[in-house]
Image (cartoon, rainbow, N blue to C red):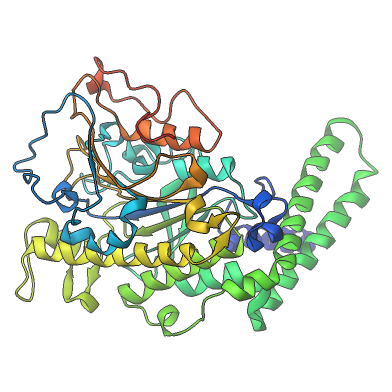
Length: 463
C-alpha cells in the first residue's frame, strides 16, 4: 500500500513538473471557437520577450535624435511624442519596420525598485515584478498577473534558452505568487513535447494518455474515500477532488482542440535538436507561437538568457564570445563590442517580426490575431550591462483588442526625478487595466522618487 501511495504521489509531481505551468488556474471556455476566430471568442494575448544584457536607449532613437552619452538623460518635463510615419527605424530594430503602425517605442521609464540582482547583471524577477531581484520571487510578476486576467488552458507558457544545456529550467524570470517561481522551459525539445503531446504520437502521446488515465484513477479514488469522512477532513478531500477534476478538464480541453494543435504544431526538426543558440531560440519562438495560435495559452514569456549571470554567445551570428565580455567592451572577429550588441539586437527583432507576421496572417473576429495581441520587448537589466535603471527601454507591438491607442509612436517620458516621470510599474498597471484587472499598485515603489507620484497608469497608452 505504501508503494502505491508513493507511486501516486510521484506521478502527480511528475505531471505538475512536466506541464511547466500552474495547473490549478481557471479554465478557458469556448477554446475551439477561439482557435476558429469567432468574434465571441476573441481574447487578449500578451507576449513578453525578455533579452539579457540590456537594451541601449541609443538603439531605439529615431534619425536626427542626439545619441545619449555618459548616461545623460533628456530634459523634457512632459511626454514628448514623435510619429513613426515617414521615419526610418534605427538599424538595431529595423526588422520591425513593417509593423511601424503597430509599434510604440517607450523611452524614459525607470525601474530602480528592481535593483539588487546579481552583481548588477540582471534584476531577475524584478524586471517583470518591479521589486528587488536579489530577494527571489517576492510577488507575482506581470506575465502571471495577466495570465490570471486572460486565462487559457495553460495560464502561462514560459520558454527560454540558457548558456548551459544541462540547465533546462530558468527559475529567475517569472513568479506566480510570493515564493513561487514559475520555471521557464529551456529545452526546446521538451517544451515541444509538453505542449503538443496529445498530437505528436509515439511516447509523447502515450505519456499524455497516461496522465489522463491517472487523473481518472485519482479522482475516482478520492470519491470512494470521501464517503468515509466528515467535517473538516471531508472538506479538505473535496479540495483535492476539485484539483484532480480541474487537471482532468484541462486534459480534456486539450484533447478537444487537437485539430487546432495539429495545424499549429511546428515540425520537430533540426532546430529542436541541434544545440546552437540560434537554433534553440528560433525553436522556442516557433513553439510559443504555435501555443498561442492553437489556443493553449494567452500569455507567453520567452527569455533569451536572463536571470543571474546568464549570458549567451552567438557563434552562428559571428559572435563566439558571450555577452558578459561584450558588456565589458570586448569585440570579436573584427567587430567592436557595440557592433556585437547591434547584431544580437537585430536578430531578436527579426524573431519578433516573424512572430508578429505569423499572428497577422491568422484571421480572428473582424481582424487578425495580432490585433488582439501585445508583444512587449524589454531586457531583464534595463538599459545596459551594468544598468542604473533610471531608464528602461520598452517596445510594444500589437493591438490588444483596441484597448491601447494605435501604434506608430515614439514616446519620450519625462526623465528620472522629473515631476511627471513614469516607471515600469506604471506600464504594468496600464496593461492590467487594459486587461480588465486594474490594480492600485504593482511591485515596490522607488524610494528615490519620494517627490514623484508613482501611482496609476500611463494615460498616453490607453485608448
